[in-house]
Length: 199
Image 1 (cartoon, rainbow, N blue to C red):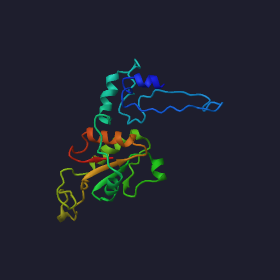
Image 2: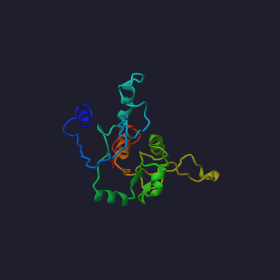
Image 3: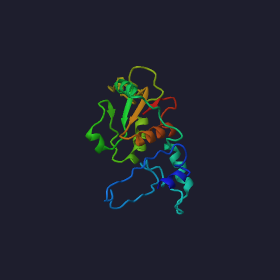
Image 4: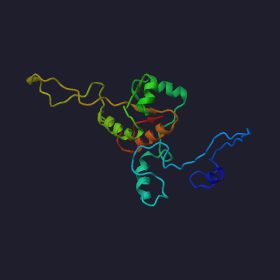
C-alpha cells in the first residue's frame, strides 16, 4: 500500500506522510484488511464520483462539478485557536457548523448556526437558501424593509432581508467538510467575492 501511494500521481511526492508500525504479537491485529479506493472522502453531491478509471462515467463531468468544492485550489482562511475564539464572540460573523444533525446534537459552539442538514450533500442547498436571506447591497444599520407596504392602508413596513454578516466562519470535526464547504462558498458565486470566509 505504501509503495502504491508513493508512486501514485495524486498521492506521491514529498508531501506524502505515512507511518508504518511493525506488529510484534503472534496474532494479527486485524482478521482481514481491505483497502478501498473512494472517489471522495466526504461528498457535496455535485455530480458523479471523481474516480476517473470507471469507463461508464465521463471523468470531466465530475471534475468540473467538483472544482466548486476543491480545497486544493481555493479554501477559506485558516484561523488560529485564538482567532477562532474571537470570531465566535463577534456578533457580525456568521459561524456555521457544517456537520450533520447527529453530530450537532452532541455539541456545538453556542454562537453557531445549525444548517439542519442530514448529510453533507445537503449543504449546497442550505448555502443557496442562506445567501438569499441577506441583502448583500445593504449599507445602513437599520433593518431593510419592503417599500411596497402602504402605511395609509394600515400596512406597516415588513422586513425583507437581513443585514449581511461581515464574514462567515465554518467548522467541522476533522477539517475535511469545513475545507470543502469554504471552497464551495468561495467558488459558487452565491456570496459576494469580498466576503471573508474562515475555517
